[in-house]
Image (cartoon, rainbow, N blue to C red; front, side):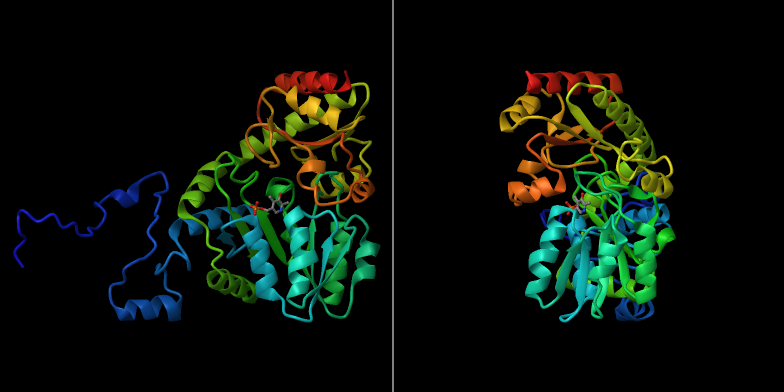
Length: 393
Ligand SMILES: *Cc1c(COP(=O)(O)O)cnc(C)c1O
C-alpha cells in the first residue's frame, strides 16, 4: 500500500544495525517480543531454544544480571526477581505444600520472620524459629515433616554467626533443604553452595547492586528440578524484576568487589575506633571479643563484612541526640549502599517486638547498626565519635 506522505501514523521499526555491538548492556524495557512464526514459538516453549516472548516470563536484562550473580555464587540457572522478598516467596511458594514444616533462624530479616510467623502458617505450613548459632537448637526443632531450613550466616543486628557446617550436616542426614540468605555476607565472604546449601537467596537491593536505587532479588538452586519449579512459580506469581532495575544493578555489580573490599576495611577500622571510646560496646565478627569470632574466622576467613553494631548507654533521648548529631551519615534502615548508613533497630527492623523481646536479643534504645560505606574512614570515625559524644552529653 502506498504510504500517504501526510500520514502521522507511527509504526514499529527494528533496531539500527550495529546496535548489538554496544559495549554497555542495552536496556530492554519491552514487555513483548515478536516471533518469526508459530514454529519459532514452539521452539522457544517446547525445546528451550533461546528467545523471549513476554517480560513477566523472562527478559534480557534479568538474564544478563542473573548470569553474573551465578558466576559470583558458583551457581547455575539462578533467577533474578523483583525483590529479596520475592526470592524468598519463590522458595516458599514453589517448593512447599500444606502439611510441610519449615525452620527459620530466630534472627532472620524482619519480613522473612513475618513470612514464617504469619503467612506460611495461614497456608497450612507449620514453622518453628530457632537459634541458628546453636545447631542443637535447630536439631531439636526438626520434625518428620520438616522440609526446609532458612538461615542467614551473619544475623541482624547483633551479627551472630550461624553454625553453618553443623546445620548443613543435619540437612544432609535428614534430607532437608537448606536455604541460605547470603545478603549480608555476599559471595565475596562465602559461597553457601560450597558449604552444603541447596538454595541461595539474595536481596540484590543491598551490597550487590550497592547504590540504593534498585529493588531486586536472586535465587539459585543446586538441583535443576528445583530451579525449574522456582522459575515457573516466579512467572505464575508475577515476581518479575523490572528491566531498568536489572540494568542498574548490573552496572553496580562491576564495582562490587572494589566497594565490598573498601567498605570491609573501613568497617574493621571503624569498629576498632569505636571500641576505644568510653561507654561504647562494639559488635563486629572480625574482633576477637565477638562471641562467635572463631566460627566467623573459620567460615569467612578474613571477610568479616561491612556491618558494625554498637551500643551506648541511655534511652530514646540519647538515641535521638546521636542520630541528629551524626552529620552526613544517612539515618536509614537499609544496608549495602556506597555511603555509610545508620539504623536504629528498636524503631525500625525490630519495632514490632516488645522491649522485653528486644532485650532478649540484646537490642536496647542504645543499639545502632552501621552499614559502612566507602568514604574516607577518618571522616567516618570523626563523625561517629562526635555523634556518640553528643548522645553521652
Ligand atoms: C533487605 C533484606 C531482605 C529483603 O530484600 P528486599 O530486596 O528488600 O525485598 C532479605 N534478607 C536480608 C538479609 C535483607 O537484608
